Image (tube, rainbow, N blue to C red; front, side, top):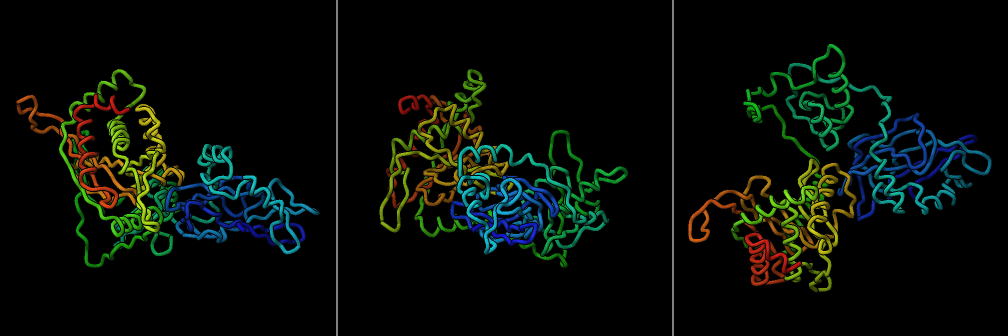
Length: 478
């Protein structure tokens, strides 16, 4: 059950519990309440945003009424089935007044009408986990446009004193971090109001309100915090490092949400997969020229380097299907998957995530580029459904965007392999009998040694390198 009710003479208080999140998720962190006690809510209205281990999602409520109480503050973690919000609905003879309000039986529980509405998809599910495609699409479009009602609890005054707290405050919620960055609020200058010294959204909201009030200085870090250096136009200068003092305490950050999921998955990969890595340098000049040519001839397609490497990976996996697989440890079998569900690493404010492009082998180059852009934008906005983050069969990791040449990545469990692409830089290279400056990149390939030996891994990596140096080879493998 996800909702319980208590009947009175004229009204019914219904407790809406955190619904089943799907994908094996068992808990969520409250990142933003969209309603306050006393507010009126309608059926399928988003009442709270929560962050799970997979994504930030909105929770709609399957009933109409008046908010009686909220269970849990921003930053708190609640488990599936625990009380989330209590709503008072008017009760009429034989039925519950108000659209979507559940009737109440003699035992005080939500009656069969509510259960029928839940099965029909009238709420009680997270956005992105809906019971019907139409509901999922409508909620995704409208989930982030509902304005947040004004809070009724007094917000604490922002910290604008000349001294910064000796202990650095914790900002757990990515929503709070993003809000502070957007409004140039220095969290070190705020007084945390959350348990354990956690900076909550209301702390940042109060600082923003104070900064926009006439005659009030912007809530930036005080001059004693981090002295800034003058920067040349167009350059970003890092702040001078601040030496820690003896009275500063260590910062403890709870391992939860996406970060905990990443930690568990990487640790499991290291425990279970006997991985090996091989690498090769490749002359990427022809691939760069191909990208530039596509930009001129197909500007609307916006085909980037990641899309080109994705197309190469798909072609390579069709030639070496042993690598598009996973190991079923319970049955002691290697399972080769016929479909290529291509994952790619994307760095976001919430951490490293791996969006998955399903059936990548059926997509054209332009379609691959479009899917990569869509998934990347959704990942950075925290709008990916859990299904978009699971089920991958192979991962592409372009760590060259961080300005590094090589890496030995950890395989995305339970997959069998991952291709890493380093930065493309000008280097001396033997070309047509001469030493010239060419666009060179390092390709690294990490694979599960249980599914294949070095011959298959080396063959795949050599195929990728050959396609980078001679992109016309792709035509023969499409």
